[in-house]
Image (tube, rainbow, N blue to C red; front, side):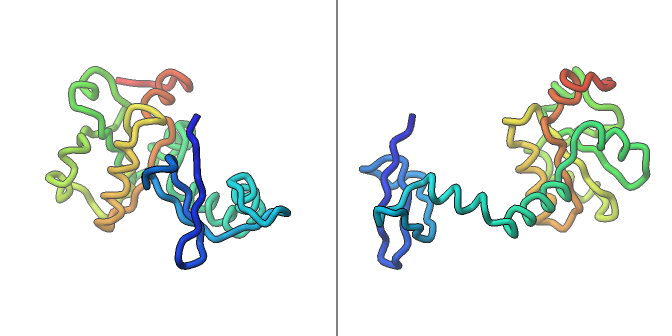
Length: 166
């Protein structure tokens, strides 16, 4: 379990450090005082949870930019959707979601001109913990390509929902 320390900064904010002697993974946030005049991470998180405007924004963006296997399965029946498998090409060759094209994340910049800015690009990688899909989605968005990410990746499609693979 990580140990955290909280330090007051010069701008009257507080910084959270994952190790009290080093500045690693610094997170700065506005002060929230508890009844003892101090600040705790629990208080900070509870304050965020009660911010309904931020929650509304978060869930609207989540629905706009991510989808699950059932939604993807329905979406693929329509034109204007390009499914991109960003896993390594050997893994794509072994098995992939039908209609997907293979563009491994490390080749995305080179193959960008082959994609249309009129399509919605749905990217997926190995599983929920794999960040190749999120990284590819960010790259596409930064280059003005409409993009979404399949939550859970290939693992959820194949093993949890048991949908068709090729």
